[in-house]
Length: 268
Length: 296
Figure (cartoon, each protein chain N blue to C red):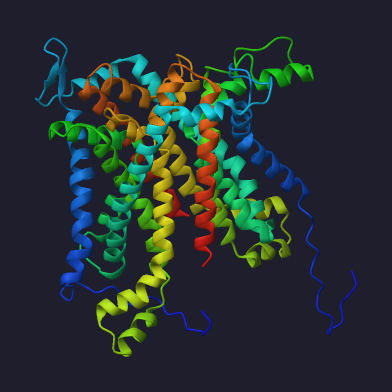
């Protein structure tokens, strides 16, 4: 071993290219996307039997989706449910986040656990518990009960994003506002809200997409009107054609747009 | 922000006494909402577990009794299902953890400018219908499916095997797939927070990469593993969709038992008792793991 002279700094070791790691990662990605690729392929398959290899290329299943009243109603219901549930969830989530962030009170951590409970416990528990309660109270199960169920697990989802953002807010931002003579409502509207707005939106988008694809809680709280997953679920058990694959691909494309939107927004 | 504002942690929360209207307005509504719509229903469910269903009269007898738990504990079929569910949940969690670690490490530390894009690519499958993704495994694993076709083409199989579908294998495999993003995402965050200097210190002290991974990296990303692992465990414990779609007659899980009791069997007390079992298992595991995590 040669002794380095005082003035020479040690050369940093050149990082080895992680080929093995990259290969393993690629394999995991392939595993992750395999069923999705299968679904997309099936949606264009000319054969009505749900298997590969592809017999022929067609858009027929997609046009069938656009004419399918059951699916279209399901989609419309899902959009309505997700929108209302997300609005409810986000409103309560923002309030809860501010309560937890700003005030120290007896039962603060219990409150936080209680709000997060619908995420910690399996969805089937949420579903049957709410079903039992609604039945006991004489409330008929319908899209309304579905909305309430989605709002319950939407709150912790939305709250998480807002709380994280709030905890990073510099204290002197608000103080600066007060120092400049603003009243509390003004400080909120012109200082605090612009700061947390993006986290509220990304929390809401997350809650929306979870509601849109929700199955387990929804099954127990659905009445006569089906959401899109409920519609798909009933189809999967009876008549199965590649039309379902086309519907799922469309849902994937729509959701991808939402995710990319969220990515753009949270980069502010 | 163009001006550099020194980052100071938020002011300490106001203690009671100086709270006033703001406090009641922010805490009140969510507290009321969550209590009425979740905590009370949960309590009702727990009470239901101690009621009985009278099949002769077709209604619930609202006197407290342990008959549901007696029924569960004396039925080998029910016990087997519960045991199988726990094993499947544990197995799926373990497999997901092992598969996710390399990918999360790669994205966090070697992703570079593609890190955000790769993270989005991990989230994207979550936004395709869970039902259809699970159903796709039916297509892949069936006797006319992709896997059999591939194995025959490669020469490993003479004729299609019926073993891949409607078995514990298909259930575990489908679970491993659908929950994978929930394990990868917290791990990516955990790896991103890992200080590079700590890893370098390990190597500088002469440790081999495997040792550095085992003694330095893994303990530091443990919170991420915990978050992802608890999610996957809880999700699998309660799920009944995947076993319905790709599981066989002997792949039933506790979630299926709950669903059946609340569905065709109309025996809500028994269904509630099964739900209580699930809750106890999930909460028990969480408590156990929290204690181990604090001991680290």
